[in-house]
Amino acid sequence: MTQDQLKSQVLIRGGWSTAETVTDTNLNTLINRAYKWAAGYKKWPFTEGKVTTTYVSTTEDYSYPEGWKSDSIRLLQIGDKRVQKLVWSEYQSFKEDLSDSSDRVYSDFGGRYYINPSIDLSGTITAWGQYTPADIGDSENTVFEGEDDEGDEAVVEKTMAFVYERIGELKN
Image (cartoon, rainbow, N blue to C red; front, side):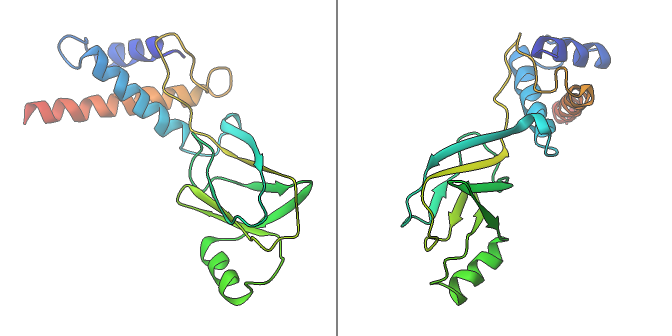
């Protein structure tokens, strides 16, 4: 569905108009909030992405790719070698207990990912994870288009919940 189609569904189902209930601009904002909520609800296969960057062997700390969900990297390779993911607390213990180890491990936390700087690898970092779709415009399709109609339905229902919440605030 496009943003215009989502907007029409919300207004029709709620029996509302943009003049009396919520402005057109505010409704677009609420639709995009609901869209990001629905797109991030689970690891949809159509929101998976791959990114590559240069590996620097002395660097441990890397920024997440722009637009990616924090803590969503599920597979990481350096060159053609796979690197094992550790839970953040396990990675911290690994660094304390085995700081000189060349084990191929990494972890991610808070929008950053950390690779054991003692790894004896070189090449390109390739990471696979989840991205958060950008806001949709009036005639742009959601990521659910042709993939999962339930996602678009979730956007409509969540937007309606936001509008009902806003109406309640206006009455008080």
